[in-house]
Image 1 (cartoon, rainbow, N blue to C red):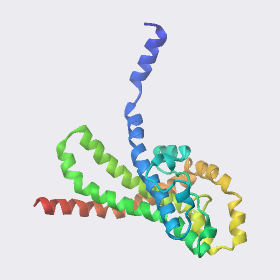
Image 2: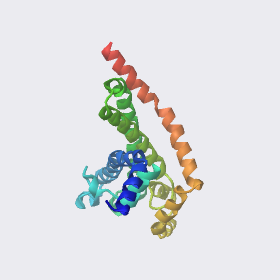
Image 3: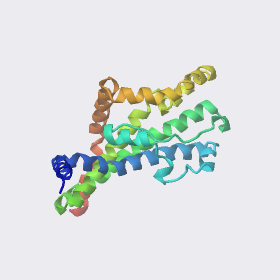
Image 4: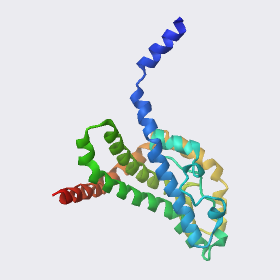
Length: 234
């Protein structure tokens, strides 16, 4: 075997594969969160009179339709990210300002609900899966926990009022059309700004702090799930 091959084997042997495994395990929870987030936007918009998302095939549980590769990488690596925005034509709404705000709010609200549901599930399955003592059971338990956390992180991240995040569209309801359209001119720069802010302590630390604080408060749902299971088991 060549020296190059031996060196490569030595490098691979020294890698901390647990980091790569943990990153890979984050993909499925991240896909669940962004898919349901964008589906919520599209569904609410459809109910309010805008069928754009439906016509473009975005009212689907197929995660491929909703993936923004950079946003997914950000979610997996930094626990904050985004999906490919669902197209919305606010001029199809009866009340454009109000209905646009409701449509934008649907994403973060859905993620908040998902967080609570998965925490409830986490508490309910905690003892059975922990008792099972298998790697698969531990993986499932970790994935449920991570889905809850990522969903909350996605909700908090998206209420930031920087285009194209949902917060900027919610802010629209309190602005004139002229000011909103002026704000949207900078939408193409929004993601670059967010990428830099999240990757640094300027926005990264406050987001982590806010997410962890609220997650700790919502963890009561896990307690309820645990108590429910114990009551059923007797």
